[in-house]
Image (tube, rainbow, N blue to C red):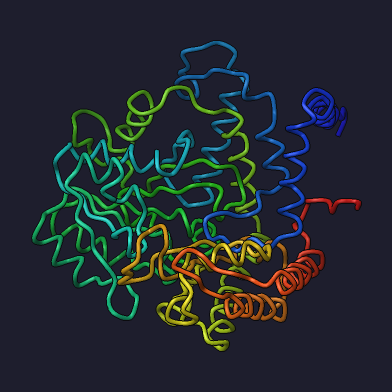
Length: 450
């Protein structure tokens, strides 16, 4: 670096925070230590790369830039246009896309844009039911997607796989304008071709939401829907190790006619984001997206993606070997869905809380056919994105499985939500977790000096 001005900026910023707001500084430092010493096995996030975090923490957020590169409604966008175009080019390269919009604040926003431009209020869309592993934005009744539209949910079969036969039957019966294929708690491969055949049969558009598997798609560890679905959406933080944000992309059908009038389908998505849904983009977020997309296109990212899948399969098997009922019998991606009620007579919320006490972070989750409320659940969802980034070995993955099962077997259940865990046992588990965390630190995150 010719001039370390950015390093001086970052250092000065944290010094100012510590001097001017020590209360907040202490809280931020506490969260840093929590992440360092715990084992995050949450499927819906990862450890953002420090270089992406550095981009997000810059002064680029000071610029207001409504519009798109070369067509802004504000001055001062010389570099902003270059940031955004770089992010667009990198998204297209990473996903082999012909069109990319990098402005969505979230993947949910991206899904809302697609839905609102292709489906009128009251018309029909289809998506995987929330309690079967779908997402709020795929038609859940509590979400805008299930309130403004006639949302039809498809489900899983009795083995825990997407029931493509039911998808086709429901599509033939309800004739949706849009079919959404994508999940938040599905551990298996999604067959994009089968969805596209069904969509074509009923004249529906197909949206592939790859939010949970975007990194695997880029690395070739999961089939790529970009040229199969009409539109593909994703977030950038779950498996791209970048900032929280969304993308809208299209492949070979980017120039299909606009169903609402003149222009193309990609043009409809462009105007559907701005000005229809959002105002000014978050520039520092786009800068961080550009950084994450560059990392995801490098050869070493492919090795990381392989570890994600390998560790998920190994962890699923190790849990099953220790008495855990693993939904669908295993995993093809980063997600493991487990039935803790059937395994240890422990609800999902108790499992989540007890494991968190021991610094193992997972989340409660519906399992297929769950009869408990979404605030309790019969199962948990585990993910390997963060663990793979930390470089855990197969032996360490086995230790994690052993710890999870030991904690859940140690729980004394009081009610669906209440439990007791011996403090001596808890402290022992915490120490074991800390040893694994120190042996496999988060890359780029310095260990505290204490």
